[in-house]
Image (cartoon, rainbow, N blue to C red; front, side):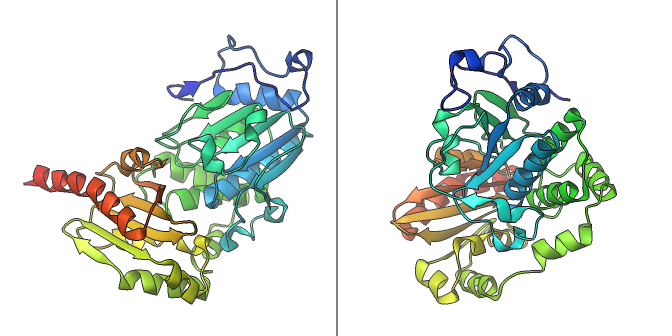
Length: 356
């Protein structure tokens, strides 16, 4: 295992809300014990009994599949787990085994030995209140990932967080059941964009093979993800494509709140629309914007690998991967679009200049 991204920083924070210092002793490994990340995490899991498992707001396939796989691992270890996200699970992922057990909430409460945060490059990405009281295990693969937890496993080379969960399962000696394989294959398929994004590598296909051999059905999973689109999302896509703009190697599109309401669409229906702007021939970077309530705008950024959109998103308070990132901006749609284009244009122009 590559340990170049290891960050095992422990702080004097309680494991559970009502844990005493004496109870903490033995539950959390000493900071001086520099073993690999998966082993450190498993030590906490083995000594605890009840865990909270969370991911980012507006959960995607990697978030949902990873949460469900972690719960299956904990159940094999004889532990209890509660799964919570700030937003509801998207319709296309509700067929995953155990997805009905994930509940949505604004605040988390209760006594837990640790909170496991998956695919969150910052604590604020969860949009959940109350997490600060727990011992935090941060498992992430974002380029903009930060070591905000008590225990941090950040591997930016991983194609999905599900890949790290798979390594955790292997380290634990647990069984990859067909149900777990289905969840983990979904993380890999969705976070590589159907094996199209820049994070796709030889090991991605090796992992896909192992998960299929363990019982994942690649055809059914692909159909559930890519061929179960609700009509309202297609209507929203039509509105977005009607707003498509192209400028040299840059393209962008958007939908207003009114257009979302006319289509009967929800925020989850905006997922993936940015890719239609990126697929324009000759385009190197793309943006998709949609209006949120309370005078805010959600922005999705994509590139074909030559422009680092994660760095752009981070400057605007967001984050993500080099080729896929996003942020939330205050103000009107017009103001947000102006700021995004100000950030994207120089980078795209530099690419064109380098070719000249």
